[in-house]
Image 1 (spheres, rainbow, N blue to C red):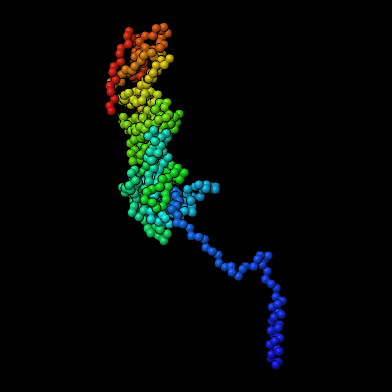
Image 2 (cartoon, rainbow, N blue to C red; image 1 turned 90 degrees about the vertical axis):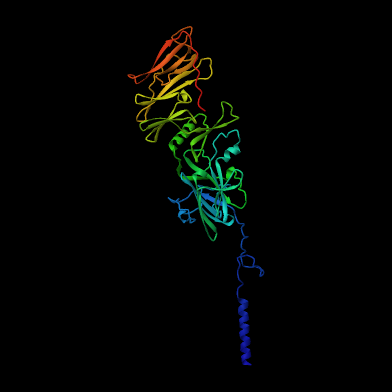
Amino acid sequence: MTRFVALASSVAALSAACASAPAPQNSGKPAPSPQESAVVKAPAPREPSPLVSVTDPYNLPENPSIDGDIAEWGSLLPRSPGGKPSPTDPNARDAPSHLAFALTKDGAFVAADLAELAKDGIWLAFGFPPSAPAPSSGDEAHAARFERMFRLDKRGLFQVAPGGALEPVAHSVTAMKRTERGMTIEARIPVSAYPRASEAPIVAARVRAIAATTPAPPKIDAGEWIDVPVPEPVAFEPHAKLRAAVYHQNRAERKPVGLSYSPADLDHIETVRHPGKDTSTAVATEYPLYVFERKLGDVEIGHVSAVIPSIAVFKAGELMELVDIGDVGEEPMGIVERNKQIHIFSYSQTDKLDDAGFQAGWSVLAILEDGSTLYPFNAETGVGRWEKVYEIHSDKFDWFGMRGIPREYADEETPRAIEILWRFDKQYGGYLPTTRQLTTLPAPRPKPRKKP
């Protein structure tokens, strides 16, 4: 009986203690329902992405080894933009695949870490802004010449031909390695596969890469290109300095022409210009970049005509000067060696007779043994404009000059025909003019036809 009473007392005391315990506090928040789960739901799985970011390399190897191991390249993430990135920036740092692109004079080098939809290969395009103006054949066709589209995958590098077929790129080198994410791949694109270039030297390329999930390459809109600076300005030999000088010459013109060239054909340069005053059409013309003319010791000269008729002067293979002779004819009339110098003779004459008369004149440019230039020529004749005029010269340019009827000469009321001849004067060190009157103006000799 005593044990029962004690047990009953203990139960009563425990019940009283439980009843007096304070209720748990929840800071005013509703107590969770017993049915609610404490487990946080995982986000919905993201769809595999085709995006591939593009950057210039942080650490371009001096002699890249094309073996599929991209560790020597360092990070392939795009460089952080200055300020807040544009919402339309096509180069997303959070893309699952990343690519570094380096354009050089010896080839374009590519290193990529590919995953998700790009793990089996990519479409890779690069190029340059097209020259302007575009020829009348069409903007799209013109722009296509400044772009190249490739497919890069475990099979190698393939270029998209104009008809859409994939053609292996000769002399390209590729290597890949499988990874848990997909694959890493390296490639070298030869210069022979470069598109046309519109600047000299080249300081940047436009690049775009995306997963090769379709049998045909995607069309790249203007806003989708990613500008990638080159490791160092890219200039191609031969005549890299001369090509750059022609571009500099063009930028100084009041109306520059569109200039471009193919890195696979460095002997030529193309211009696109409006013919005359007609700006509704534009014509593309290909010129030799340089035409050799004469050599004196280690001094060499040649003709350059793409932008302005000019003479390029080299000494020991180095460009010394690009001399504009555009004011005195489209091309030299003759070149001779005289007085231990190279003498270049040019003649210019306006095509139409205006109210003031024709303009006409000669010029002589001398190239010295040290590669310097001078003009050993006295142009003072007392004649301004001509009513009629034509040039004359001997085969060896012992003499050269003009015959015609000047508008004003020697205060004569009735203009008469005259002949002005220049001959070399050794004491003067150049060419001095003499003038004589003619009783009649002989007919000019027919000019020989230019060689096609």
